[in-house]
Image 1 (cartoon, helix red, strand yellow):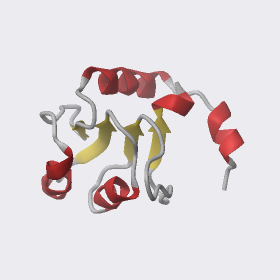
Image 2: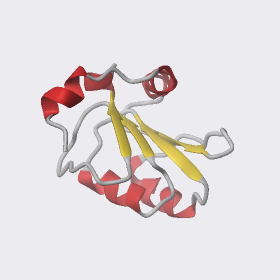
Image 3: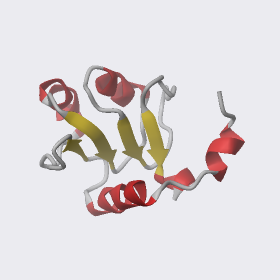
Length: 108
């Protein structure tokens, strides 16, 4: 497992940087889902994210303009998404296996 210092030193690749830019463009604490075919969902509020993740059969990534919390990661684990973009670590954050988490505050 890598230390926080290692994670802080890593700059995200160009495709992830583009997702950081998308996160900047959505309202605070909203999310969008990127699907495997390259399309995106409409903006999703926090109260609707769990339902949206359960219904998103081909979710590839979730882009949040807000912290990545344990609750959000639980929703991700119930979906096919393998990438999460957020601003920073939030409450109850634990990096799950098999999910790539990129944080704007650390990896930009």
